[in-house]
Image (cartoon, rainbow, N blue to C red):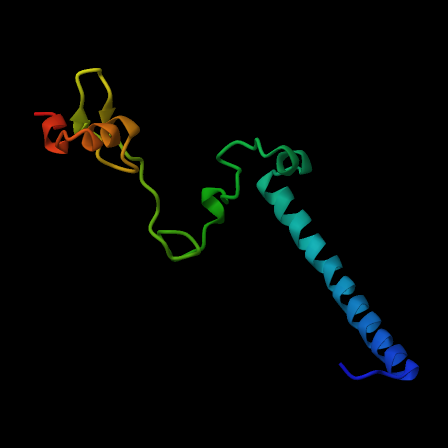
Amino acid sequence: MPKLSADAIKARIDQLQKQLAAAQSNKVPAIKTVKALMKKLGVTVADLADGSAPAARRGRPPKAAKAKGTASGSNGSKPRTARGKVAIKYRDDKGNTWTGRGRTPRWLVDAEKGGTKRDSFLVK
């Protein structure tokens, strides 16, 4: 990196200080916007601090605040639906069960390493 003169360094510092002042001046309207949104949604600083806000207030706008004209909200994704229980697909003689979804449980991995076929644990 080439050596800079003292005047060049001072000029760069002045330029960076101006950029910092501009960035800080943008914070004021952003803070006002956040405060207004928190008031509208009924969120307090305590809700943000402890992370135990009720699910209805945790990052989701109330139904009335959804974007107009879309059934799925403002991001265009499909709305989540409640999922029912998944039927058990595998069971061993010790009562261990698995639905077949997610990571294979340790009891089934161990049984397969021991030479038992996964199909032998299928629930009929």
